[in-house]
Image 1 (cartoon, rainbow, N blue to C red):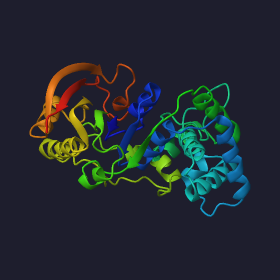
Image 2: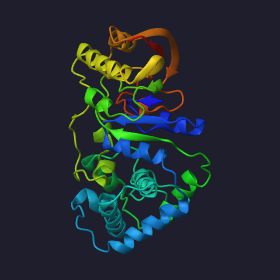
Image 3: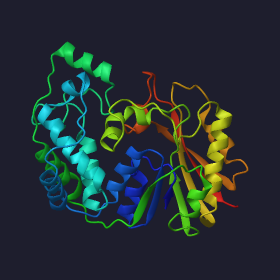
Image 4: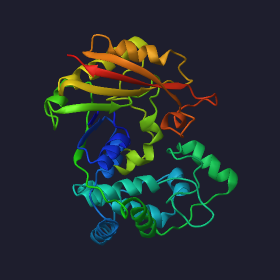
Length: 331
């Protein structure tokens, strides 16, 4: 199975559960790190052991971000420990245990403060995507919310137990950071010429805020300690025609590594910020691509099932209908 827009690795993890090998591609380093963790073959004990080893090796981090946001976002001792773990993982994140640890920390960087016990490292965050500095500081000041000390290792251990203690499957696959518009990327793809299924969901037209909305996680991966609004490596959203053309290049690249009569399923929809006919954009991208559409089915909307597209829409309007498009590679 191949997913050229793997995002957080949902299809790759589904392949794991089914015992199928998979390949994922994404241009976002945050998405790749989270997806790699879903293919990690490890245990809670190994993950916690790696965390302790890093903390033993790095007592003083070389890089600790400063400024008003960081003072309000994390207790100073928590930030210090996070920076030690960050540095250790930047030096070495090759093993499955380290990849799992990295994703666990990224997932716990920021979030709401529950009444029972802390499950996130940060001050209270009203959303799961990265709070923008000015908004976040104003939010915390207005409510007199100060960052509390939390037990970083305990949170890591609890999350490791939750995600990996019951995992009985063995993952076979890989997730690659790359641009699926690049045909040379596919020339080096594992499983080239043997792929029979492609299951994917490309970014919806106009949805370009994934990296800015994940800026804190990107910082943990080695990015800047500030919001990054760059769009490098993303499909061009300047017009529906350009967007369709670049998607077509992806479909053509995919076809070259698939077997004859390979099947592809694409989940696609729209966001209220861009009032366009999303289905026609996707249909246009498949024209002259080597893929023949077999069926188009309604998939409901992002508001059903709390899908990711809903969280990235800046509108309070009802989420738009999504579709599953089935196609066959004819070359």
